[in-house]
Length: 114
Length: 113
Image 1: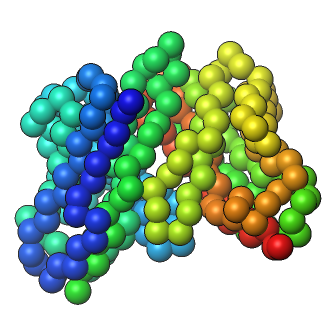
Image 2: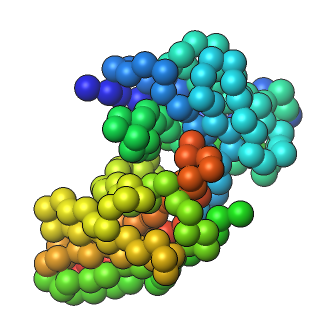
């Protein structure tokens, strides 16, 4: 069966510090991978998605970047965090089983920038 | 651009009621529509996925329908239970870019014992 991991689960970082959040998927090959952010009381905002190693689509201009160094690894980074980067970060994956591309989400990382 | 709207934003019902959550989208050229459940502080759990060629999907007490021509989907929950309390979100992907999903802002459901 497939499993998605995110770490860390929670993170408190000062403004101006760097960020690295990691997401890995087990039990599938060549998944589409996604990073979303959910601000308090709001919907999900798609930040980045990737259809293959080294292929990153950025959806919203911002202080963040993403990389996919391996097939089942997706990393979200920032060189200098802003207060507005606080939020709940969710990683997701999908594959085209019978053309369905159903999405599955990880447990999320709660980031607080102080 | 695809806009997804969910109404109502919040709903409180007594245990045992049957209820309907609504999701509407502006571009009918969708590829998939997926319903999720989110518990506070947790990730999203997939409930049902409807492909564009399908009209409905069922899982236990849940039934989701899709009407592409009117740009609407409904999630029907039968015999609601307190454990159903959560936020329910719908998401759609488009035919011309089925890798990208657009989310509604969700309906927060509270089922009272």
